[in-house]
Length: 376
Image (cartoon, rainbow, N blue to C red):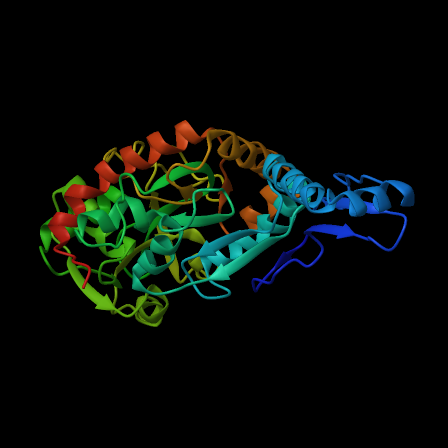
């Protein structure tokens, strides 16, 4: 059975082998496919007399060479995939990309009738994982679960990422999206965006927002200021999680982040959600207006996850992976599982994903420049 596992391991169930039994009745060439059904077995059986004649005539060696060549052709011609697929994620276990990959991994493995291995490579603001895939063979067996930062934000922070952000990858499919939401401490005297903007303009620099330097919450704050003509002070933290206690205590006024991290605090009434940074309302926060409804249409901050393959991966391999992921993302249990962690299943064609990445990268450029964020 195809499974998803944490560590990579060689699959001993698949092998090409040649068995020649000169002392017995059989000469066998066998190739066993990876598929659980065992389809792909090819055998040539010859009688003992034929074997004896081949050996005596000196034709056994050429025959063996012919059989080996046949095995190579058979192995090369087998349909994709014929060995385990590795998905490299840019985070440690239990964090967003890892969670998402382990939600869809088992069902993708089932659809492909092949093992799917999840490999965690955190660090370098996602560049370590991305570069590993960009420099892998373009055969579809090594994929990258990208996040917004890799191709939309980091290219504006550094010219030396270890890969070409505009040409190193072949998009496969957008997996999920997660719109950001502007949250305020319950003590901030603003119940909607207009009141927050008026308050910020009345006291320039007095209101603050928090996040980790160079991350989406940091850059999103500058995107909000550009969209509203306000001046808020950025307070850097190691992470949004580190800033959360101060937001709840009131020393931090605003955080722009994905809904999942704030679900319990929102329900407790300790924070308020003023606007969804998207063109439409967020299905999990139907009472919160969209950026367009709030009068700030340029304030659009979406976090996405998607699968990328190395550039020059064969189109038929990309299409096979995309087709299976469409089935996975259309499954009710997967959609519900993603919603439980604050995300919405996406899908679509590779071309559509490529277009989205290009547009998103253009959207983030001005805000990254305004923030002054650089990748060290």
